[in-house]
Image (cartoon, rainbow, N blue to C red; front, side):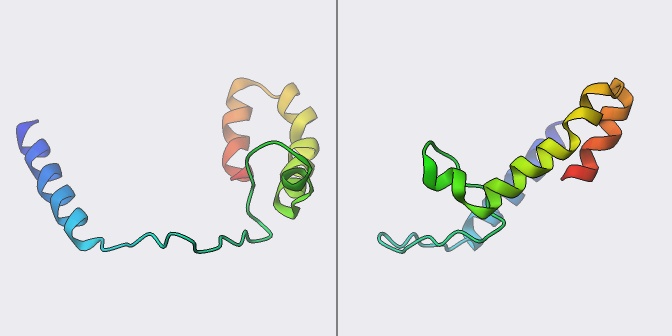
Length: 80
């Protein structure tokens, strides 16, 4: 267990030192059509990705409700 923790710590330190990402303060974020926007309000609800998600949920809802626990587990990867 200790060896695993040491290995993880070394990897984590290396990973952190390689990541030189900068956050640009006022950079605009433009969502892609397949993105899901979180939050409340009509703009998020009207976004294409959110509409696609709702359509997908409606399409599988009955089958998912009727499925056994095992069938639900098999169904989940298909949705992702």
